[in-house]
Length: 145
Image (cartoon, rainbow, N blue to C red):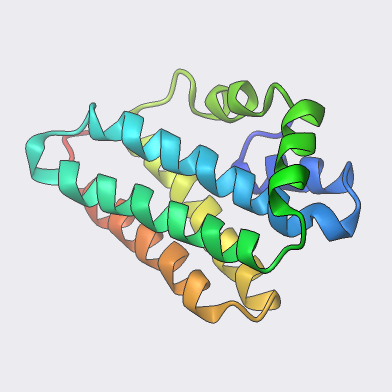
């Protein structure tokens, strides 16, 4: 099992036909949005709004990916059946780690997601990923160690 988000995504992509990759990435973006909403309950009021903005950006990226994929809803449902443990696998990457470590893992995943989106010619969506990574980096320096 992978120990970072890029590895997890790679493992999942390797198990799917290429025509499902964009929808799979959208599913992962929505999982990340859910994680950001959980973090919003953990960070102080100073960072809560920013974390929720990150969640909204993840949802926007997912929408862009789904809009570019035919039958996205049906494909997402099939992927959910194929990978019912996706949420647990994502959570396992963060389990037992400090908030700062979790943010570092997520920021690396955001950067990799941005690169992938650029390969799909979705530069605007990639910028949303970059914004999330930059926010997490900044917040990590402001949180107590």
